[in-house]
Length: 612
Image 1 (cartoon, helix red, strand yellow):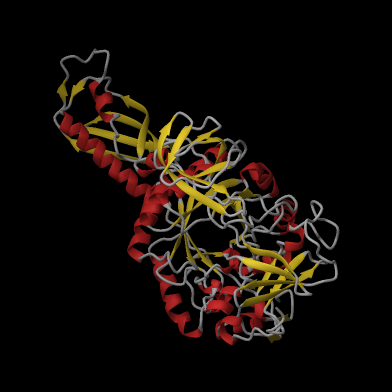
Image 2: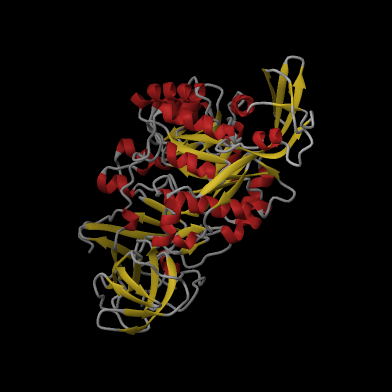
């Protein structure tokens, strides 16, 4: 099985750096319809990234994964043809109405927004022509194994980054509150806001807590188990994250996967060297969870939606203008440190000066000895990542020999791709052909800023001839250019033709959660034997009695009061088993329902506006 590391590319520069730091594949937003309205890219930039990626045998997947209104279908199809023409490797889509259109023979991946959470759904997607599904983040290792046994599709799973508290594609809260649909790339992230928690009798249980804000995902300790379960593509979230995050996290998972490659095939070419030691704690993170891979566990951080970063130590003493901190991790001017105050709120300050383990803050915080500190801005680490922090080189063997009218150089890369380039030149006998160092070998091996590194250089003339440095440089440069062009052409994707036999959809009816908002999508499902179809909320805006969010995360469980007795500890709150729970944020009110049979929490708009 091939193991693929898939990294986010906010733009061309970020994509190139992800490749340099070890990505086997990238996902990047199209000029439109890409599920991240703030991360669009021109066709010219995408084409440049395709060529750069294909040079290393890496792939580029483009996201066209928003829901589409009827008037957007035609321009979206035109865009897809343009993407096919510039050689992108695959397309991520959510709106199945596109399958009723005249698409080019491009590989299709089902975005996680397609709600890829059941064997039946995934088998259907395989039957209608998808080559890969991006599994729901909530998928457990056991479920991954079950899906792997039931389908031949490539299985892609998230391994790192921010978590949506709702099943992807099943959250309508942003649309409801702000007319900004997450399914159309404009989520306003109301899950990161603070809420008050009430019981059904109107008693305040918690005040101004981030009750729906999850920690970040980190599956690094479960990679081997995910491989064993059949996952072949490991996806890093973060098309809106900064460049240091992309560099650091890509390099971190590259090293992990490289240590697990025995018995598996390499996806792309080249080896990476780094000027830093990758460490996920040292870039943006809200604390970590591996979510539902194994079993339920603490998942939320009620105190903050901001980055905590790296645990540094504790305050051992507080001076008039300084703090002394335990631990051994070096501190630097410009570091950002944070802590929880007496009310449980995250506070922070910048370091203006450092003397051993004593720091001078830019503004003295109200803090006590014994307080735990994290570093969410690592000045030294960020500086390491600001410049060139990685180099990726493809191994190449070089063979130099004489021809009837000059000389030839053959280059063969680590994939076995080979070019031979000749120059016409005078074959002048060398004066000192028996020297310890062959000048031809020395000069040809200088591959400098090219993507290649010489693993072997053989001069079949054994130093017999003298060539000017300029001639050798020209021979090497032109041979390298030919090999680069060959690699880019070789890794252009083959056409991927889709067949659709009209297989029936697993259910004959679909409600608003199928996210159908155009005629093509409705026609697609009718073509697959669906009899009753309800249009999606982005079109109807009919929220009455409909769940705004469906989530496997359960606030009762998080608070230690699971109705099924699965809570991880004794609850600190007096929550009656029979009472409902209510969320409030200013004038925003929501009702929480609990489907214990399926172990789901659902968030609804309140039935009675005055209930709080």
